[in-house]
Image (cartoon, rainbow, N blue to C red; front, top):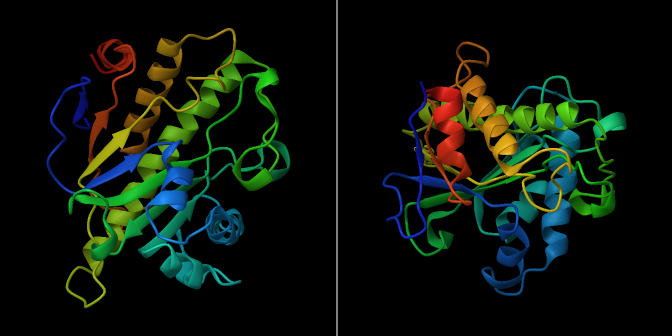
Amino acid sequence: LVDMTVLVEDEERPHGQVAHLHVGMLRTHARTHVAGMKEDVYDRLYSAMLREAQAAPGRLRAAVNAPQGAVGAMHDLGFAGSFSRVPGHCSPSQHGAVGAVFIDVYAPAHRPLCERNVALIYVEGPNGNVGAGGTGLFGVARPAIGDSDDFLKAVEDTASNTMLAVREYNGLAEVGRAGPEALPRIEVLQFCLVSGGPYRHPEVSKLDVAKAIVRGLIAGCSGGSPGTVGAPPAVRLAYDEDVFRTAVKAVAG
């Protein structure tokens, strides 16, 4: 079973090489961390990466395989690598980019705050709130999911796809760890309550969302094609009214 710990508000940062998932952090980083960079650089990179991933659902894709300037945008943002993955059952016409995962690996000189912060992960979580708007990543349609069970399943699938993406990335990092362009392995995944705020379905609670996330992370630890996945990271769940602690006890025992 995956090592899953719930952080409290004043807890020390986890040890190991960390990838942070924070849906609100992406634009802030684009505006402030890399001097002179604009949000449209992310749009260029992620537009190309999303198309690349949607052409091969259920497989991690790298920026070096994507056309239209993805590598240039990646380097402009200070990344050593950029990767994307959509779930194997992805239907862009029905769900847009929902469930898509993007892993941005910082070049050593651009790691923010601490050398252990090796990557930033962005996910496109589902929208269960009709009043919260119908667009997501750079204007891609994100229709509201009206059925509460379907919404929670989409949350679970997003979490599972995130874990699978990190495991496939770790597989690549482990294969190339002796080379001059070696990528750091992700040892700790710090995860937040995706779609648990304004996009939460009105008929579900934060705890329901947290349970779906925990189920998805556990499911993602056992999937993937043999030979393509590395070891799963430890998971640190961000504090959010302590719903994750209750969810872990309910789901994982």
